[in-house]
Image (tube, rainbow, N blue to C red; front, side, top):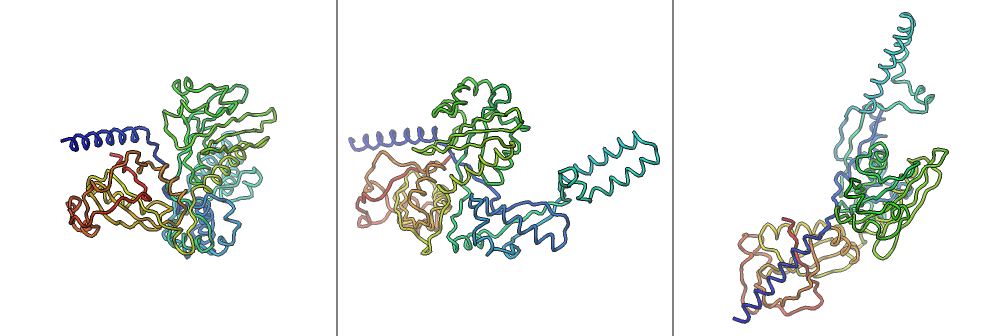
Length: 433
């Protein structure tokens, strides 16, 4: 009876701990389309298509490595021409070109209304001819948009293998969500919100090109009451801690931008990264260059932390862990898929199952530190603080799990019970349901 009560108590404490972990979980962002890009081209002819393949590859390399310098590395030249790596491609009409043609038509109508009929006809014909005349774009310092968009996707395994051959780390699709607290001073200081597209639209587009999950607060009354604007302007650490609770980002960065009388912009930013702080600045530059400096710094810094370098042997070592709280066959499948999908994991081998506990041996292609970094990002596996003896588990063979869902409850003879192994880390599976 005492043992039964103790078991129920432990289960109750364990369940409560799981709920607390889930309530405070901060789940990372999954970035789609890392191996695809869309680039403008002037025609659907073979020469322009080949050039488009190369241009799209440049964008993909920046996204999957997080490093712009990869375009200057030997691996880039080894991948050209990029056509051999193309998996699919298609064409679409370029919306920018459509808008350009419509604007030119409007200008032609206005010109025709203001000039004599004979002159208007000449003007209209001239405008029509200018749609494909890039010299007009050069004169106005705004190049004419290309008529088509070439959508390209590349073979992931072939591209990853080539990067591994040249020892270039790859940044996986699981990436930290970054919340940007931005205060702007253009005569008056204000908190920039997600709806301010006119000001931050280019920044969002640039972050997307790097595969960087960059988000903005709503900047409503709730946000404004949770943050002191002057402290945010001063980039004081901890300023946005209370306001972050609303959004639960993986990372939170503070930034101030201000405009000089010349119309140029300057900026400073501060990003806490564990026990360190990442800071940066850009002075007296067009706003687009300020955004570029910010995104470049963020991407380079985060990629150096999370991008995984495949070792020449295929493994950087082995790691064993027990995972508790796997209650159903579907959760068993989810755990297996999750472990094999983590960028630092080369292979996940199931050793045994006891009731709701799985033991895995992992072969790592990244470092153990990166493995823990990814666990913190995703939040699906939480370190167990309450130790329960493995002898209380019921053991099932991995081969049985591959056959029937009810194998989760299968038992093996007493002789198969394993001894406690203190070197095995214990985790709790957070199903997310």
